[in-house]
Amino acid sequence: MRTRIIAALVAIPIVVIPIYLGGFWGLSLGVAITVLGALEMYYMLETGGYKPSRWIGIPWAVMLFLAGWDPELVQRSSVEVTGLLTAPTLRLIELLSFPPSSVLVAGFLITLTYSLFVQERPVDTWLSTSMVAIYLGITLGQIVSLRFLPHGFSYVLFGFLVTWANDSVAFFVGVFLGKHKIFLRLSPKKTWEGTIGGVIGAGLAGAFLAYALPVQPGPLFGGFVGVAAGILAFFGDLSISMMKRQVGVKDSGTIFPGHGGMLDRLDSLLFTLPFIYQAMLFYERVVL
Image (cartoon, rainbow, N blue to C red; front, side, top):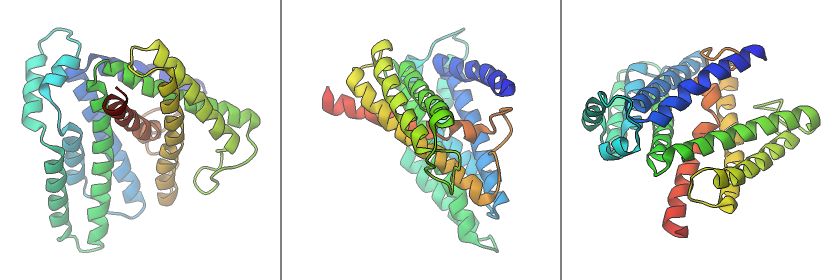
């Protein structure tokens, strides 16, 4: 437990500060997370007998992560520290950010063409390479889009805190009150009591944070988003558990002592933060 707490205290500022600053720092963090997450997922697939192409999949995931970035939004949503990196960062985005549909089509064609020359189970290579790139590139890109909204850092912080509230309440309720298992095949420790407690905790956190943070929706909508995010966090956690159990690994990696790998920390957030982004778009289009 001590190792887990120390690792969390070190990791939180490393993640939160670049997200707050945006620009070059947010770009660097996002690319690093995309690469590490893709490496972990490809490692798990290789352990399970699949043969993805890392040298195609990782650049494809990064390009999907960068797809559709607007340099003006990047500049408007970032906090300047020295100003020295602003122009090079915007130029880099102009060079590397293409429309998402173009990146998807190009990646599919390149991956499929490469798979034609794979002797054994070429379809497995095509699908396993594509799955990782699309899953991580698209979901992490949606998190960036959330950051680009007005008061975007507050929305990202809202998503982090709602997800952590769900995980924390689910853990403690499950430890002290949990009796009825919910998904033995994928996560033997999860209980109905813990899961329901986590969703309620996420809903209450969402209502409070919508009031406390400078975000547009009020507590009622914030509570609804919190409940939905709590449910999605449960399925996000199970998604990585499903993969780990099928290929026979305990953790996706070892980058966080006591916590496992990057995907072990991202599993819920990859479901909740993109949903919050879509919820905010819905709110702007329909409610306002």
